[in-house]
Length: 438
Ligand code: ARG
Image (cartoon, rainbow, N blue to C red; front, side, top):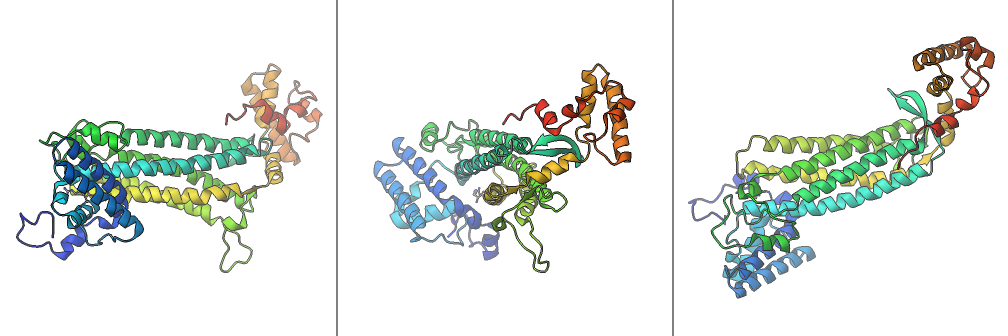
């Protein structure tokens, strides 16, 4: 029986119910739905809107329903319209008329807005815990390699010498900002829309501060239309998760490159790699590729939410039921990616010799060679030009700046002396640059 049976003379067609129902994806919020109802009932009782006996019956009934769902004794009806309806109807079936008083001064519109905020608040904490751990893993790996020299790249061309510590620490900084964005998103979502009613508040003498406090919210959404209409907290979270996925995806892309025979800077542990069905020699970085691939899903979820919201008149519209699948998918995807990525990086073997070898080729100390001349009074543009000529000479002579004889240096610029060799050592180049901050 539908909630609105009084107004209607026919049962809903099965196809209407199948299409309209959100139980498949909102039953995930059963705990939060019940917690919200317990707080609402306690407030109704405290305000004298329902009797103390009814209040107690409702709260005990709701607690029993939660326990029974958790233990498996009560199965959620897959044909129910949504989790809110299922819980309320089960309550009334169990405790009788008192159950019918629960929805006094409330609408499913403020109920669902409350449930999503409670659910996402908890999810934010879980994502942040995982992110903190992943950031620590990358930080630790970085600091095992404070002296491991590798080429830094621009345009994927060898550019200047850096340490592997510096390269990984860049990601640590990015992930720390992601953490800040998630914690901002959580703080902004943590206000209570409960008491907004359908849209215009309610005529009952409710106490919104009380329900907000019982549910651990920091305050209430002031404007009741705003309370039931906006999902900007979902957008903000999806945006923060999307940016996080950009960072994970870029690091995965680098790991994929570093694993290739062309680089061989790292090797992934066998337990976090896969083989090929036909090529016996293959060891593939599937996890890293899949994380890179799954970033697209999360961006898609953000786009779904933005598009779903952009043309909606105030207040609630059924379109908004689409919020849950998108934001839950984004959260689940990000969590899954971090679960795979953390041990993959922890067990990743770094091969410093190959990094050092790559750093020794490609004239990545050329900037330092020019800076040496600047130190001897030459303007940078002239120093740059002289060093360019030296590099061209080395390429012709098939040697490096380290092995080019001093006479050849002097032939191009008088200011060179034997201490140039110390100045262009990769270790010197790295030491003379800013230390990573992480
Ligand atoms: N299942 C609905 C949703 O997720 C609950 C709110 C229903 N409200 C309404 N006025 N139909 O959005």
